[in-house]
Length: 191
Image (cartoon, rainbow, N blue to C red; front, side, top):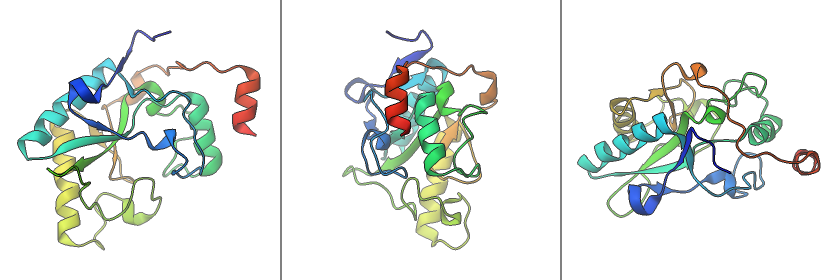
């Protein structure tokens, strides 16, 4: 069943690269979190993401999506793995990913190699803060290029993660529970 506000980002037609980290076990929770492998976003955020990829292409890059729409159950799992509001939003507040208006991205060069951003995705340390002065100039440049592309496309950054961008006033969007799990499924995931 499709949600009317969510659209699927298709790497073949939209030209972006997609690597949903939470669909693998190589993430901060150390386990597969997503039951659905599709990259979904609120239609407003999807339009901005496609614009970001167009801007990236002008500079010789391509956007790679690391996370997009995140079901509320997944937010609970991430909060369990790292209950630190600086990096993971408390599920009681509702993640902007669960509203479909936040996206985690990086840039790929002409060889589809990720640019050096100084840390990996989900590296929950101060080195991941976008303007950390302890990183070399080439890393700062890469982060600033990403920031310019994403802001130029209509997204806003956050202070703790170079990879996270969201629509301004994200709280005005409703939470979307697109992946309904049975009580047994949810219990098994949260166990």
